[in-house]
Image (cartoon, one colour):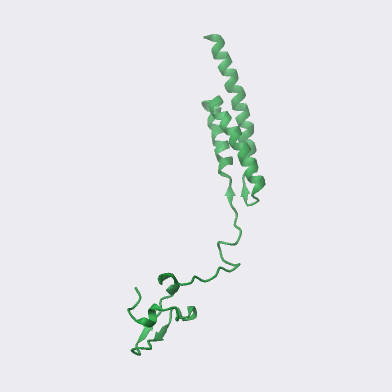
Length: 137
């Protein structure tokens, strides 16, 4: 909490004096200025972001979530629910392929391709098993 002094509540405190002390113009007392003074005063102007700010530096986006979902659906579909999980695996793989092409910071091309291929295998075996089951029953 800022001290209840008029000088501490104004924007006259330069950002360079943050973390130091200033002398109150009214009572000549030394006042400690917090380091984050501008963020603690309502309505105070915020410092402009620089080009070197961490939020503006392009960072690696990691692996596409759709590529991961594609591979997980496809691998689970190999063991159970091939037809039901093969279709989402192929769809998620296609969405991931487009997302990766659009955003160079996102990876997972091989994971999406593997999910699509295994998803097609799931659909093929799932359909074959369904036809076999229908012919036997």
